[in-house]
Amino acid sequence: MKKLCILLAILLLVCLLATCSVFASAESVSAETAPLDMQPFIEQLCELNGTNDGGQIRDFLLRQFRAVLGESNVIERYFADQEQNSGYNIEGFIDVASTEQCVVIGAHYDAVGEGANDNAAGIAVLFETMKLLYAQRGSLPCDILFVAFDLEEEGLVGSTRYVESQLHDKTETHGAIGNDDVLLMFNIDSIALGDNLYLMCENKHTDIADLILSHSDMLTEKPYAKGVYGELDSFGYGYYEAVQGSDHTPFRLNDIPTALFFSGNYGILGYSDGSGVMNTSSDTYSNLIAKNPDYAKRIDSVANTICDTLTDTDFATIAQNARKQLVNNRLTYNRWWPALVVLGVLVILAVFTWLYHRKLQKKAILGTGEVKSDKIFDKPQAEDIFSFDNTADGKNGKDTDDDLDGIFTFKK
Image 1: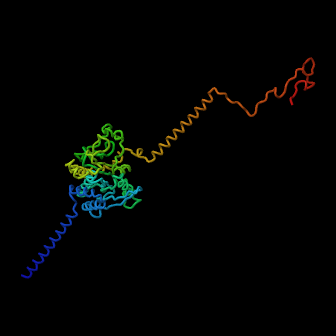
Image 2: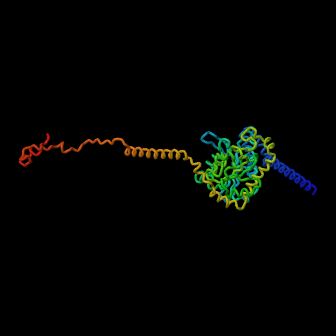
């Protein structure tokens, strides 16, 4: 009995040690791979941006995104364009089996210097939204695609290539997303600085914009009336505004409804973050804290707004109707415009040339100039053919039928 107790005690001790080892191992792995809180996340991203090491930046984002969504649900995708620009988009997804429709949530991760505002803060929103939506994945109405775009600062290269390569007819490319399946694209760009936090959808009020605004206490919808943008009005920033130059633009030009979150001022020429640091080496984390110590509130606000919008019971119905409320930009962005303009000018010149020619003709007819009447053949006169002779032979000076030569003389 004593031996049995000792044996059981030893077994119990071994099990306890094994359990402690497992928990310690699990705790160690969890600490290494757990997603960071927002402040450490944006600090580390700014630090990596400052090194300008694309590989380290991508590895950091891949680790953090996979810690939330899982290893197999996050990939990096290489792209290149015809201008020899190349980079990597980082893509993650939450799959909802009951639907083929999806929402794209994006932000660009390339930066000038540390890029604290433009656009580490936007990536932080993407990361926070990812965590919120994954925790509520059971109540999502559709698939969610998260994309950290590369080379936005080089001319929307990463987002353009994403739209061109990923948003195809599903019959053309295996695994591609049907363009019509994308209900909405959220884009987060430079939201930490500036006097106002704006929502920009269409250049008119829409139901989807109203739904998004109903879930935010910080967002202001971009005003539509002309005259509110000061000097920007000369660039067409009014009701019929051109699509803003950020990563939602390629989606919008493919008739996908978009919602841009942006912070700036509109009383001066061009977009401004109100600090003078955008796209400069001064866009650092230390300057971000100095200029807006409450930047984290904006990040939380945008992330919660996107999450609450997507989990709203009315979202699916409103989003499915969003395309019907799009402003028609096809004429504005039609690639045939230059050719059509040249053709129109040529037609106008041809019409004016024809009318001018007709005018010259009428002037010649109605003018006082001598009209030429030269002919190749002239109709002969009677005197040119024959002549009468009243002195010919005859009685009492009268012609008789006796002699034809007495009546007329034929010319030879």
